[in-house]
Length: 159
Image (cartoon, rainbow, N blue to C red; front, side, top):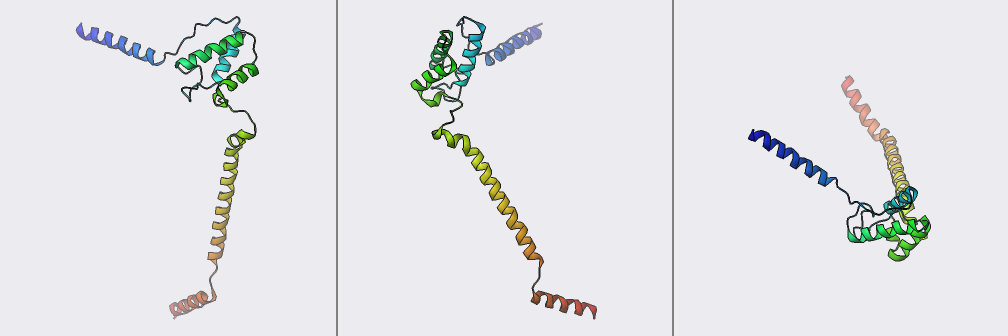
């Protein structure tokens, strides 16, 4: 009887632990429409928390993220479009709040850098493989002196 009570209590404790790990903050903001809610959530997913730096506004539990999330919700409900909300956030917090930076001259290195590194790596790999093949071809030939020594050895074995 006591053993079954401990098992039951253990199961309840384990369930509470699992539920608390998967818990996420719940916003109680009520949108004017489901479309506004969808747009606001998409916007909040695309904006980085200035305090946490590696979480979006939805995932972050910081007070700053909660405030910004509420501000995004209110701006979307007020009828502002995507660009207006992004412009407001970047003017206030800089381009840092954008998870996906804009394609502009100062961000070319972010967008084109990986492609440049890939091309550079392919070129280095091509040059390395080509040098290996050329050195193998050069190694296959023997000099006249080596041929002479080989002939001498072969003649010695034939005797």
